[in-house]
Structure formats: C-alpha cells, structure tokens
Image 1 (cartoon, rainbow, N blue to C red):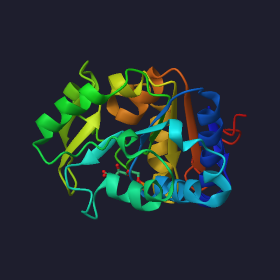
Image 2: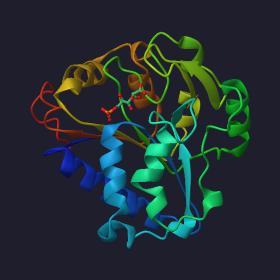
Image 3: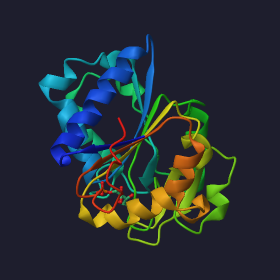
Length: 234
Ligand code: 6PG
C-alpha cells in the first residue's frame, strides 16, 4: 500500500500515529527496528513530544535497529546516537529494552552477537531508501546479503562510514509490518524505479517490498511526484 502525505511534517505525523496504534495492539511486548536518516529523525522527535509519548506504554517497547554504521553512539554518524538524542533519551523505555547493534567489537562479531538478541518476527520495521535503491545497509549488487538466510550481517557501503551491520532481507521480510519512510524530491526517481521494477533483485528496497507480507510506503508528495496519479491507495 502507498500513502502519500502532504509533506515531511504530515509524513512524520502519520508514521507516529501508526507507531502508537501498532504498539497499542500488542499486549505485552512491542518490538520495533529503527532506521537512520533525516526522515525517521523527524518521526522520532515527534514521538518524543508529550502529545505522542503520553499515548505509548513505553514499558513494553523493545527497540532494535535495522542497520548501523559501525561507529560508537557518540559519533555523529551513528544511527543509535541519532535515535537516542531524538527519542530514546526522552521516553521511559527500560534501558535493557534498547538493543543497539554497535558493541565496540568487529562488525563480524557484532553481527553474530546481534543475531542472538534478535526476535524472529519484529512487530514493526521502519526503513528508508537511498537514492541508489538501498535499504537498511543492503546495497545494490550485494546479492550475497540480499539472498542470505543469516538474520544479521556485516556489509560495506559504497558511501562514507563504509563498515555497516544490517538486518538482512530475510529478517526484514519476516516482520509483521514494514514501513518505508520516503521524503523529498531527491527520492522521486528512485521511488518510481523501485515501485515499478520487474526485477526486485536490482534494488534491495524493491526486494524487501516484494517479499514482505505487510508493506506500507509512507511517502511525501515531493517523493511521489513521478508516480502515476492515483497512487494514494487508501
Ligand atoms: C546511508 C544513508 C541511508 C539513509 C537513506 C534515507 O547511511 O547510507 O544515510 O541509509 O537512511 O538514504 O535517508 P533520508 O531519510 O535522510 O532520506
């Protein structure tokens, strides 16, 4: 399903409402994997606001990450650091329910130990897409990661902060809900390609979208500008 939000603010608002709703549907434990990037950051800041944080029972929330740049949380590139500053430092989540990927060891060892902490079916996974069609830290052309049955793997980005650890598509696709957050005109072209390709192996985002059970594309009008009119499927 594709939902087109008016702009970034509306997108964050709709994603926050979805988080609140899905969390409320789980009686004891709600497991979520967070994404990095500027679009999720706006969502996290909104969830930390009184308006939203008061509607979540944080005691049952368990926080994972979809991927991580292999740097400590204090590094400006850290997805964990961003999520802590925008959200986790401001809400009453028991610290043992926050499960960062980075552990100061090698990425290989980090991936191995994260696999042991992971639940098999996450309730909710937030993902972004890169302008090359990557999602989490699964990059185009990395067929070994794309098709791996391992739950977590170290990968290498062609961009800065090369060393990454990522949940694999095998894990991402088992989640109960997968939500792609896509905003801005710079994503219009890749969003069109990802949604219209007949070769999902070409773009990791397309692969995840075509193999996961419940996928929502939450995109803003700027990102949706190259999609066919009527893409706003209710
Ligand atoms: C990376 C990128 C990337 C990012 C997406 C969406 O580390 O390779 O930062 O994974 O999350 O490109 O980013 P935006 O939400 O900022 O568009």
